[in-house]
Image 1 (cartoon, one colour):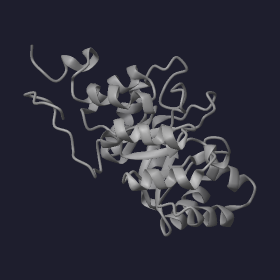
Image 2 (cartoon, rainbow, N blue to C red):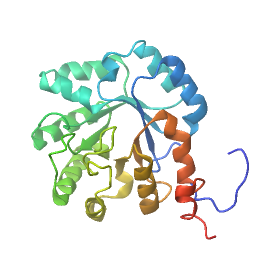
Image 3 (tube, rainbow, N blue to C red):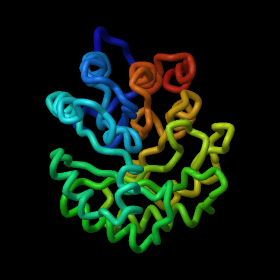
Length: 253
């Protein structure tokens, strides 16, 4: 930090297992990735190349190397995994992970239907190759899971080998753990937290109001995902109580 302030909430230092910020790269150029790292690299923990953008991203290997040199793990979005699975190309997907020297991958079923036992088997197989992050929840606004089902699915995926489970919200933040208005399904989140350790969950929270809600609920070191590159510095100030939205939460005035 550039100067000292008393009584700030303590942030876990990198590399960290909680207090993670997952950044959504939806198509940054190599130069933009370098600029992003210069500004927000110290506050970022892992980069997701959103959905299947890696398929059409120019200079993909160059960009991956830029992130690696900055010690920022990077992975392909779960929709790419689903695109391979729906075409019966699981072995090809595994070869792609090796080809691009990926150390993480995302297993999701937000766009297609996969029997959960089969999804967990994919997690088991991939966890022998890379660190798996799995995603629970659908991108279809019409599919609303009961809390007990979220808990059951998350537990099974952790047991199958997932390092973290992502609570689905899309990059727009209006499905899954949120209503279509973007409002948090508070009862759902509360129920999930009765059974799943909060440090194991990455809550997708692309909107500022959602980030504020989770920081107030779980503190500065809550895991948050789908954060836009331009929102990284603003988010870190929210975590530290240095923006009006969380200012009163961390200090007695």
